Image (cartoon, rainbow, N blue to C red; front, side, top):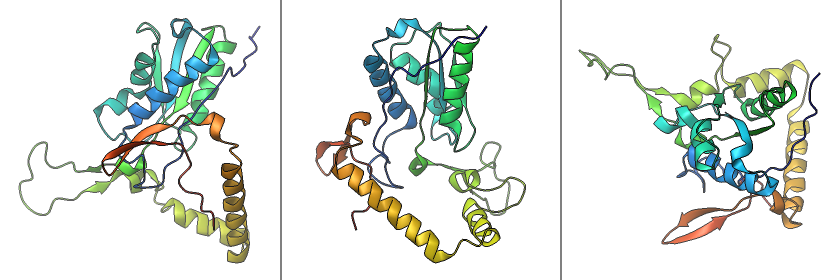
Amino acid sequence: MTQDVVILDGVRTAIGTFGGALAGHAPTTLAAAVAKEAIARSGVDPKQIGHAIFGHVINTEGRDMYLARVAAVEAGVPNEAPALTVNRLCGSGAQAIVSSAQHIMLGDVDFALAGGAECMSRSPYSSQSPRFGQKMGDMSMTDMMVAALSDPFGGGHMGVTAENVADEYQISRDVQDTFAAESQRRASVAINEGRFKSQILPIEVRVRRDMVPFDTDEHPKSS
């Protein structure tokens, strides 16, 4: 018989734009910060957490390959608790929640820590040649961000897929623009009314010579 599962609490950073306020922060740093805060809000002793699962796609540095482990350890979860980093592309964070729930339902653990972290602004360029030496000729670089947004079977970039879907279902540009504008309007209203404040953990970022809290989603435009 499976156990019932509940989400005790949660928190996130504000969402940054590409090359924006969070561009200087590693995914592991952001993951650890929200993990620690989420545990504190839940009232659970971190030593009770039996498994940590985080979603992540594009590695930006060595520690990212251990993202779930780094986030868990820095949040006070015991070293003995397993940690798993999952990649289901844009659904990676959601998959972390699903996988954590499954562990609890099956009785593997009583408490699990789930989350996700990504910083596309820090996506690296990759080259296969330097490790053993480029003997001659040009050396190519692969943009790992574009690679993550492209169909590995040759179907093109995600943006092209969106255009193809719009054509297939006859979604006009006017309808798309109206939908986008309404989404922006609703987001701006919600921000101005403080509806997201309770779910956002401010992150200190450098603005010129000062450190200031970044606590507001960066992409929504007020006009």
